[in-house]
Length: 240
Image (cartoon, rainbow, N blue to C red; front, side, top):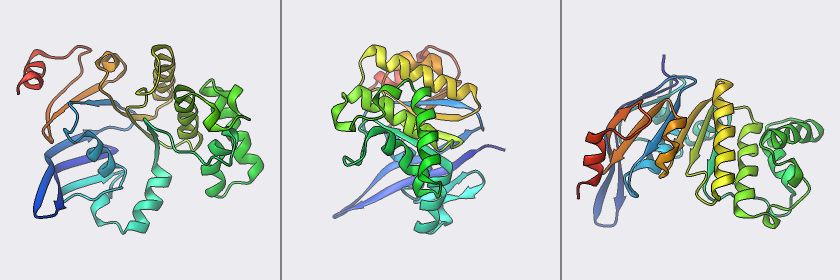
């Protein structure tokens, strides 16, 4: 059974005087332990699709199930609790509590989840080591570069040991070396059995994923496993 199953999904936003269809006829099945890369031009609906999977939004129509739970039928409170238990997320721009140091920021999700302060910090320290960021443990996040913050953000995503890791342009603020290190860490997490969903504009990262999904104008235009862009998808993406 897929860990994520999407069928005939559409998402429409009501704006003053008009409706905007952002996603249409989305069919996508993701197996547990799969590494999937989603790409396409800006405004094609990638982030909206992630928000739906994360239960930050609900579908306008169609079916979206995560771990056999129907997102569209959950209450906002149920979606929040489900999101906390199921996903870890990494965004291009990290959000921190400035009054806490790096170790405390990484430990916070565990502490809020009910672990003791000591155990939360121990697990946070382990996550920082895995992400090769233990040297920043006692620093304030705003003392770090954007690339360093993003590496710490990966540690925070790892600390809850969630089955599904969603990364939305995680290397966007990183230099090449730091981006390469982050991608190696995502590969390691995939090797441990995590399900990885990566949204990126960087097509050099195609080699990291089992499955690649191309989007354009709110729809999926292709799904493939090769490490290079198939000609038919390349041609459609290049069309005006």
